[in-house]
Amino acid sequence: MSGLIILCLIVGITFNGLGAIALYRFPDVYTRLHGATKATTFGSIFTSLGVIIYGFSKWISTGEARFCVLAIHAILALIALLLTNPTGAHAIARAAHRSGVMPKRAVVDKLAEKEGKW
Amino acid sequence: MGSYIAVTILSYLLYLVLTIGSGDIGLWSLGELVIGIPVAFVAGLAGGKVFGEYIPATLLNPYRWVLFLYYLFVPFFIAMAKANIDVAIRVFTGNINPGIVKIKTGLRKDMALTFLANSITLTPGTLSVDVDENENELYVHWIDVKNLEPEPQEICGDFPQWARRIIE
Image (tube, rainbow over all chains, first blue to last red; front, side):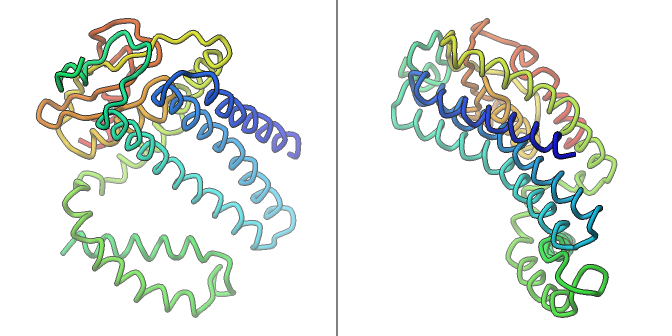
């Protein structure tokens, strides 16, 4: 069981780290949002999954309710993350586009075409 | 009236989940079970109107919840994992070809569009930037533009069909 938890943590940390690297590697706000918000969500799913597996396995083996509480709170945190993350990314992207930040190296921009900025 | 009651009940259930493990009656203490009722009532009063407007009644059907959970764990998770690996490779190679494209979704309800936009945004490589509410079109920032006028299939696979099945 601890092997599974460690695997989850490794996958999670790898993707979280990639999100940080993406901030340096990508050229503009939109592409950085891809790396920085989404890779970290995927990473956080796995780190939370590690906590959930730990909580439930401890709960089953020891029978103490506090481990069940830990797992359930991790699940709630995960749900909150999955709901707020795309909303936040969407809000940042839309705000950036409205304030005139155009995507760099873009081959097409239908939204700017619609607003007559392209 | 129905939506107020639904929100009150949902708030109480969420309160119970949050306070799980606090005592001996089942998994809760008597104090938490009692104090949850007025708290849920206030939350129901405050949130009932908003929920009634934006959340369609079709969501009360439990079959749709089963479908939603299946969607979340199987097709969506697979798409998300694939896209994450794809973007992870792009982080190292720097091989990007970005642009904002427009897709016709064919979804009518706001909730279904929100669902689709969130699914698209959570999948790396695609990021919904804006919505055209009159035409039900989404403007999507795509990290690797293969086609200037793409079909929804190319960007988000079967997500619109799932949104229709689960919400509309």
